Amino acid sequence: MRLLNIKTCELEKFKEGPKLRDALDKCAIVSHRWGNNELSFQKYEKQMKNSNYRDRQFDNPGDTPPSSEAESEGFLKTARARLKAQQQEPTQPQNNLKYIWMDTCCINKEEEGELAEAIVLMFHWYSSAKVCYAYLPDVSAVKKEFQEPGKDEGTKGAVKPRIGCFECSDWFTRGWTLQELLAPTKMYFFDRYWRFLGTKATLSAQIQRVTGIEAQYLNGDVSRACVAVKMSWLARRQTTKIEDMAYCMFGLFGINTFIRYGEREGAFLRLGQELIKQKPYDESIFAWKSPKIDTNIDPETKSSGLLAPWPTCYLGSGNLTIESSKYRPRTGYSVTNGGILFQVPNKLPENGNGRDWMAIVAWLRKNYWLKLNCWEIGGGFGARDTITIHLQKEGGNWRRMDCEAWDLRKMPRSSRSILGPKTRPMEIPQQGQGEPDRARFLAEEGSVPILKKDGSCQLHSNVM
Image: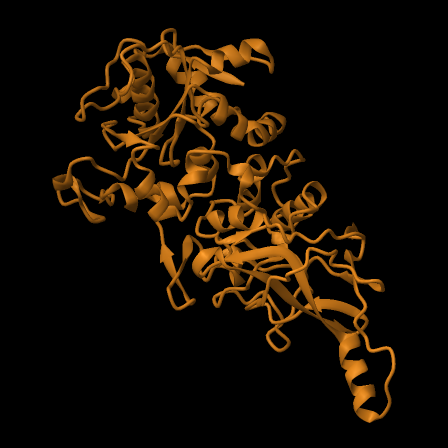
């Protein structure tokens, strides 16, 4: 891990161990949205060491980088972050910070191994740093500075960016900033001119309103949130690269596996497979619904595999839990080459006669409602309903049906095992037929689905 020394402006490299832990305890880690002309590791090594970066001050809103530095926005962002770390913290009179870290100049992205390591360890780094600075360039602490995007009449060919309130920032729509929001224990927010907006604790009400993340997870332990809830936090976000919709969750879920850009939507399926291996008790991963803008299911049968094809399928899963005194132990739940194998109760009638009986048995052999160890919290007095999904056998293979909804069944009174005295195996494919098509999940590139009260979705476009 490379850290930028705020006094010498040198990039210092640390290996995992006590020295890195001590350095992170004196480090301000920066969370931001990537913009134009970011200061990469190569640019920093080539340009910044021989510049007047050490002596130049950028503390006034009107300051701009020297023309010799190509007037880079990334240069100015890095310089102000460094100076902010040198100043006293907004809430403490003493400051012993020695380093800053930014994912622009502190990672050599041309080295695949280094990039992969950073992706896997990033959540740990954000949680270990002394403080996190969240820089929001599209937010102003002064209301009179708000503006709508459009052409800048004073500068030929220039475009004015949108400047608005804290809750309107595009920072809340990005996939990578989710873990950057949740990991730090101490977090300060700054506007476009690095004016202090507040801390994560003081702004928790606004953050909860715009992200849908409950305060207990913002200021506490996110490990208590089940898989479906964490996925619901991601469902309204987006990333520039398709694979990053999965990779940005590796740290949040504690997944340590390889990174392979080019696998596209397959990265999200692989994330689901890893979660099944590491969290076999968390069946909320199967509690997803295909939103109305999502057509990655058979248009005629409304069927699919058991794993969600894309994060948008968890839009309505934010109020689920796997914590209950009615948890029913399940055995025989495993991942196979053919799919996911469940042992389910055999509820077929043991005897009977007549044509109607034959029809009932035939129908029951092809249809099954699988009760998950997962519950929806709603109603008064903490009422909980069991999430149930419809499975149907097609051509010898089980598939999930009615993917646009799940059934809610009242939680059973008994805590007996979900398995009865007689069981039968049921193997369900992990995904639907054919390769997922990302265009089926987002109607246009750069759009974020917004869930309306009536359950329908609209697309909110963001400037990349």
